[in-house]
Amino acid sequence: MGLGTCSTAGTDQSAADIAGLKIGVGPSEIQRDAILSLGGIPTVFEINAVYNALQIRLIDGTDKSTADMIGLKLYQVTKYMTLTNQFSIVGVLMVSRKFMEMLSLEDQAIRYRFPDRKRN
Figure 1 (cartoon, rainbow, N blue to C red):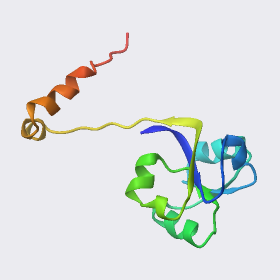
Figure 2: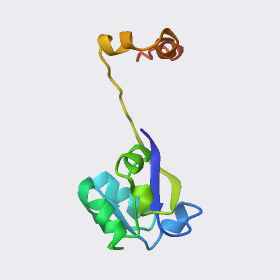
Figure 3: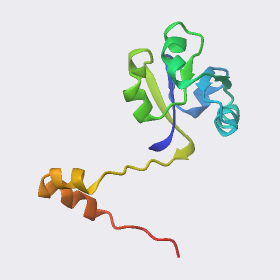
């Protein structure tokens, strides 16, 4: 769902500003290592605990994706989002034929603007 981001209550301008901050991450070793590579302090939290941890300042920020920021309303307890590019998160959207048929022809056509990419 996009490139890596870190959202904090601080005045982050670049990935270098993550250094020394406690950043809430998931239990993945890759997430922890990514934050360590930026000089941050990875702090493991389950996704449903991140909002409260940010709200009461147990952590300074989080590495959740933009979609998570919106879905979990983390923008309510963070002020800045820094595009750190520490990793790429792949997102897949699958819908049924029935759902596609409910869309307008114009919206259905959007799907065909992006041809399938096949590996050689």
